[in-house]
Image (tube, rainbow, N blue to C red):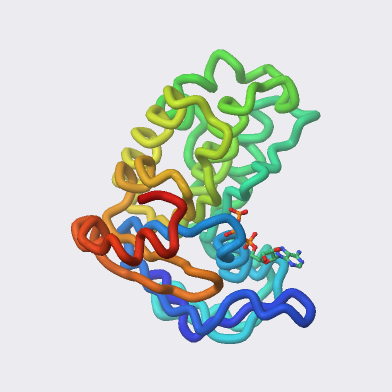
Length: 235
Ligand SMILES: Nc1ncnc2c1ncn2[C@@H]1O[C@H](COP(=O)(O)OP(=O)(O)OP(=O)(O)O)[C@@H](O)[C@H]1O
């Protein structure tokens, strides 16, 4: 289980996240929706300890992460796919995946590259191509594949659909749902694309400006028109 308790996050004097509490049970998949600037990326960076100053507690399977550094969190099984993807542009697709595999540990052996190509059929034919020669959609697939290759316990996805063509969004939704189910990954997705979030998760939090303003199932989310109108750009 991923648990965030009384989390406050700051950039300098700016107090960005206020008393955030959320839980994703082991092997379950949850979305955090919110407008631009609500603090979604800051939440994921707080969970990975990669950026803001953080107060409060993050724990995985009951073990508090304390002040541990981002690379220790990665090694303990928390994988982040950042909004800007950060794939290595000067090495090949396969080398990017191999780098992801280095993040595995003894109790979670790295995923074989052949399995990655089975889950991401688009990447096999591109394995010798440099990361920088890929399209945006191909780069996003590679960024998710690299994270999955480390066999994460907890996968954090930061707006993976941003800038992607609808056909790629559909493919990515199927792939993410399938892999999370097969590997029993605990997924926390931050998104503005509600369609993608519905396809891949079964619980939703809504982040207003820095605070959680809703938590529930998709059915409950659909019933709460007021909160949707107030905190999302959609009706
Ligand atoms: N490095 C930083 N230094 C100072 N302020 C920051 C920094 N990064 C983000 N912020 C501020 O924190 C707030 C939340 O930003 P964040 O990127 O977490 O929002 P978001 O919900 O992910 O939005 P988006 O969808 O635009 O990425 C914004 O007001 C933003 O200007």
